Image (cartoon, rainbow, N blue to C red; front, side, top):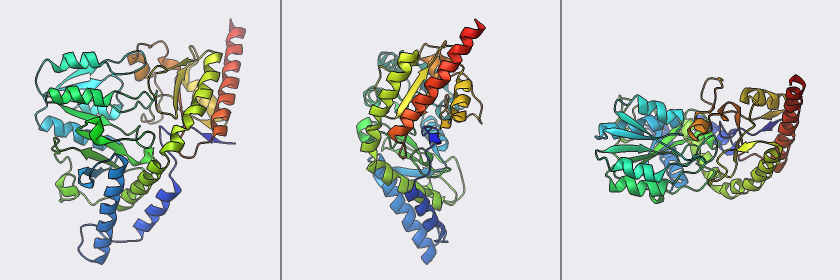
Length: 374
């Protein structure tokens, strides 16, 4: 039996998304053309825009389609700097798609610390905002490694009072918890299709009325002049179908918290440290560390047992390194042994049980070897 519990890296493509991609490929027209095939393609894109907008409760016109979460984050960050943001407050546990674009932005960067559960320190934010200027504040909605949900709405109130711009990377949270863009108070918010069961190579940026986007790609006037280039018609169609399915399945994803907690109890009794245990977390994400048990060995051992999981973010070309997120939480000692198990739309209770069985067997063998060496 093969078990896939690495949905936070990517979700297997949903059947609805596959079908939508095929239908879009059969249209055969450019969305910018005025003939019948072009009009059909344009109609599909605008319908898809409305479907993706519903996922985060915004008006369709607020959505700009991109090539994925990284481009969406980059577009937001560059737009904020172009709008006059003169310094950036970067959450300490942000994904590299945000952190690296922030560091390339050419303005002062201050790292916003988190507590031992990986939750951003709002008191620090208030003090940092009091320094003046026009800050761009970057705070992810939910962490990809621990599942910790950040106090975005509370941060937004502080940022707005200070006249700043709040960018939210919601790539990991979408499809796992309900998202209301206006209730969060974000100025921009990034999404990626492949995290919710859509195809790779397509994402979106939602932008509120306080945010003015600047083009990163120049050429035609696609995406209301915000992003040049012929739209990824089939990808956008698959994204929209996945967004509809993700909204439908929110209750089922929430129910996985019971399965997650059952596995959490099993590994904790065995000696693992649960990461972000005291924070509100995504219901299908479990990050933990077994001190002294190398994360790469855990991932490889689980794979040999037929269970696919990961260690840290899945954006390093197959390379594994100690978790920066865990280190930012004040547990650098646990960073080399931190792993993540994450479920999704196709996961079952049996998958979570099988993962627990495999990990406990692997850990028992690891412990026995260490005793032999000692």
